[in-house]
Image (tube, rainbow over all chains, first blue to last red; front, side, top):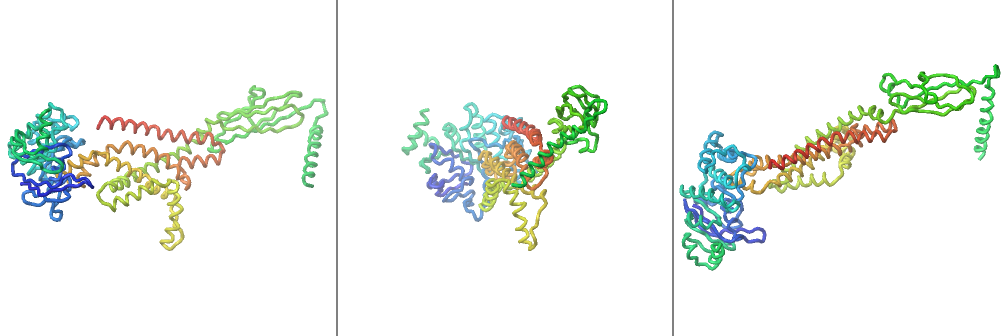
Length: 243
Length: 338
């Protein structure tokens, strides 16, 4: 469903992605792990063109989205939902308005349709009662669930998660992971940059280990976690799992 | 040289003649010498006349005791004494004069100056009219400034090199030159140029137009910086979240960034208003009769600079202080609201 071919990203002289190639199938849950600065967030942000790749190609459902001549980036982004580490809810809008806005502006839904959709999604993330609250009245975990609902309201073909639980207090991590598990069960294609090894192991279909701008190793979670082949993967997992 | 000697002779003769004349007036009959004194008074300024109303009466006191008479008044003094002649009128400072008895008829004029407090009250209405113009100019300038500044401020952040450059030039020029120079450039520098372009004589613009245009353009540049700072103060994640949902840059700006930026921009806009209220006094140089110019005109008329500038300062304070408080209140509320 998503195919990445030799993706490069440079920030001025800093070469962050040095040729990433992979393929993500429909309904697959791919977890991206790796040390900080390894380029995993940049990789994710390239997938919905929040960062413009310096070289290489990205295909979504067979269409090359890195082809500037034929592609409207806004249309691409509308099809790929994204959840951020810091939630990035719109603080001047209520929870309901946060979810309604993009479907109305981008998809042209009527206010009633958008509201109905928003309530369904709030139900799904367990926050129907918070529809009229403002983001700063919610806990971090609740905000992140609203952010997931907001992304889902666009009915995206795939969802990208950029360290969705890193900014959360420990007791709130589980409620967000539970929502993500539910999504995975329902067959959503997901790419998750995460430090939650438990989640990667339990929900992930495949784990990508990135280091220094490259996918160093990939495979089923069991294999990566119990029997890593690459030295750098071993070193990284050794440090993480010791904690 | 000759003329100085002549002047000396003339003055010397006067000294000889005057006492002789006074002596000559001394009445012989009855052996009683009399001094007849006539007191007239002058009010400065005569507020009654100025306003076309009734001037206050000046009461005459001799040696601190009221005579019960008002000026002008003629009376007889006894020989051999010194007197203190005093005029009192409501709102005026007393004027007094020591006179010693001298036979004959004498005229004295007492000149009473309006006291400081009354003078300030007297010029206050004129100053208030000036203040009204100051306030009006400021409101119009800042209102236009907000419109110009919002557009220019957005022009500084959008992804268009040409627009960025033009907006940058504008703010650089306005913020980098004195407002006084901008006023002169527009009011005096532009007309010959306009004349040249239209092939006529210099095209002069009424001062009020020059004032409004210059102040608006000036305010626009400062508001633009405020708006730019406001937009850039919004977390980058807001724009990213909006774009990741498929909103266009324009939609993201309009529905996500600007509503948040405007809230943050309100307190600094209040400060801009206060600054403009004070800076607008510079249009006094092109004869706009706002508060400062009114003060200058009154000073030229009454020569009472201390009271006038004190009053001008007080009126400015009365306009700026409530606003300063309001801005501080808004800032506090913003802090808790965010």
